[in-house]
Length: 120
Image (cartoon, rainbow, N blue to C red; front, side, top):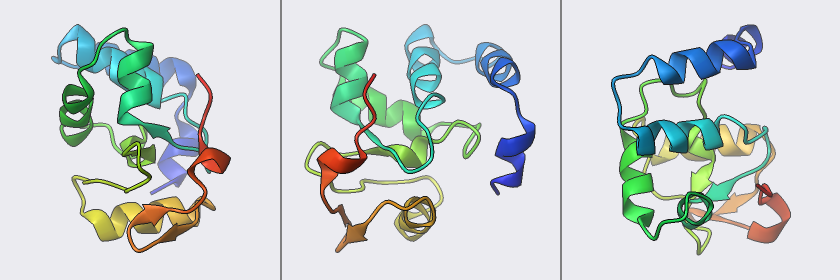
């Protein structure tokens, strides 16, 4: 899965996002998550706050419809409480991806959320 990430440049990712038929809001969400490095996470709320909205659920909806996963890594977005939340490929796969990147998870929740938070 991640070999695809290594061959895709930032410029290619931006172009792929812009070519999507999604709303500007959804594209803005994808641009943000495309910046999250391996081993780091963001919350739905942090993304919404960065976009100047309280539409946390709309951010979650955008993640659920992400056609560019895992190149645009929506698996790196979690609930504010640290719960991993849903993933289009299933929660087990989301946990596997996050753990493979070094994020510690126990009982479906990120351990020490602050340690892994990406600062926008």
